[in-house]
Length: 234
Ligand SMILES: Nc1ncnc2c1ncn2[C@@H]1O[C@H](COP(=O)(O)OP(=O)(O)O)[C@@H](O)[C@H]1O
Ligand SMILES: [Mg+2]
Image (cartoon, rainbow, N blue to C red; front, side, top):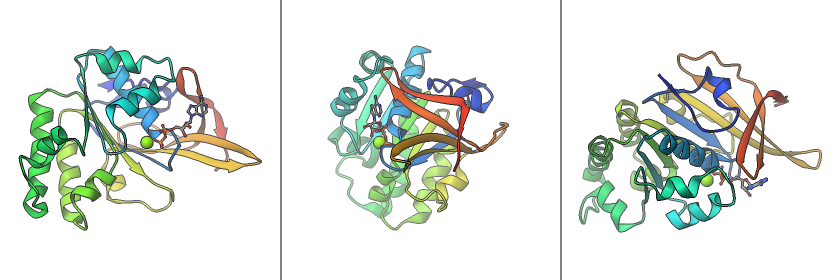
C-alpha cells in the first residue's frame, strides 16, 4: 500500500506515494527543505488518522511549530492533535526514551536505544516516523558504525513509514543509510545565474518506477511544492 507524502507534486514522481512501513532517507544540504518536507509528511499522516512521531535534535517543538506556522498547510493544528508526538533528543523525556533512566553508557546503550525506540513505536502504534537527522545517531553512537547499521536495520523492520533525514553537502558521497534504505530522495539547492535553484531527485525507490531527474521545487505560503513537469539540469 502507498501513502501520500502530503508534499504537493511529489507523489506523482513515485507511483502515487511511498510504500507503507518502509525506510526512506531524505538527504540534502542545509536549507534544501528536508524539515519542511517532513512536516508536510507528518501533517498528512495526522490528516489521514495515522499516529506520528517526530524525533529531532535540531529543533524544539516550539521552534518547529513556529517555523512551520509561516505556512498554511496545517502543521500547527496537526501538531496539537493527539495523533502527533514530538521529542527533542536533548529533552529529558527523549533521553528516557532513547537511553533509559540515567543511562550514560554508550556501549550498552546501543542496543538499548534501538530497542527502546522500536518498542516505543510498537507500543504507541506509531505509523509515521521522522528522524531529524542522522546526526542524532552520530551523537548517540560516536564512531560506532556497526551500531548505526543495527539501528537502521531495526528501523527498516518497524511497522512505521519512516523518513530519516541525512544532512549532506556532497551528493556523490553515499553513506550507509543510502545503501540500507528502501528509498533515497535528494533535495537540491544551489546558486546559479544569481539565483537559488531548488529541486528534488529520487535516487532510489525499491518497487517503484522512477526517472532520476531533478524536478523543480519551490516554496510559497502553502509550503513546499514539487513541479513534476519542470526539470532542472544537474
Ligand atoms: N516562502 C519561502 N520562499 C522561499 N524560501 C523559503 C520560504 N520559506 C522558507 N524558505 C526557506 O526554505 C528553507 C527550507 O528549510 P528547511 O526545510 O528547514 O531545510 P533543511 O531542513 O533541509 O535545512 C529555509 O532555508 C527557509 O529560509
Ligand atoms: Mg532541517
